[in-house]
Length: 373
Image 1 (cartoon, rainbow, N blue to C red):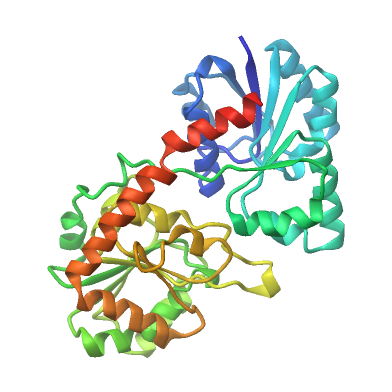
Image 2 (tube, rainbow, N blue to C red):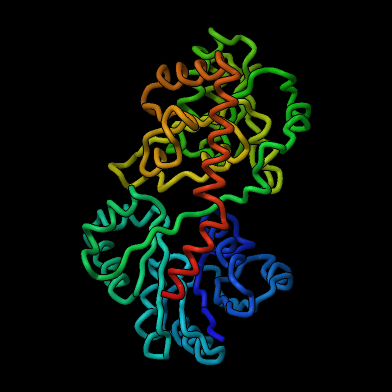
């Protein structure tokens, strides 16, 4: 039996998109074929006890490719007879690859998630990514956008394969009931535009707030639901108060992951006008929230940042808008609220597309091909 050693700094119970992606990928594999070497976090022991495969935790919250960590990875690969290695995030842990190959690993794969596009724009970091890629058989990317940024910098050092996150189409589904969320937040039967994301400038919640008065001019009873927490929360609350929008804009703060489908379902339209910042260093690699919203049967409005437009079939499942223009965003959102039947049709088309292209069943097949060669 072949086994895969997974080396990752991003693994539950630590929260985040990469952590969720890595854990979901591993859930598609036979558990007897997996061994995980990961950083440590509060609650790790309890979390790992419920997993069907062994997890070895490094005695640190930040696993780095130090000589000691590399020796541990090599020992685990030999003890468990691992013939393949998967780095949950290729940079910087992929620097362990040559030692693991010498230890007998025949297939070495590293994942990228979006932020690496910023790395390859900087000379020193670009050389690091090039060195890592040279030690791997495959480097995965999540979107055509990220591939377009990585490929010129990496040349022929390794094979590039797309491995995008998948959507749990059973969990994120049109039949999810959003009415309890509506009742708890006092939304009633108002038209609701929802954004589910961390509150950071790139995501564009500030643009939604800036243009919200224009939506209200056409739909006076509409509500804007901003789901999530983050460093921009205080500034957003000040902007809402300054504009006199307290009665129509609701900020939930952080929401447990198991409650997210119901928050998507509480909206009629999903909107996140994400924008690229810092000269291209702060960019949306893909945008899973658009796909999760579509899986819930909601039309989506996305910004132009990075790979976000790849999550929308323009005019079919939603729209891509200029995230620099609050008026443009407001106009598209209000148009969708004008036509509930058309919006529902877009949501249905989005659901069908996610089932066909973005479900974990599809991703699992790709992951198997990448690992097995």
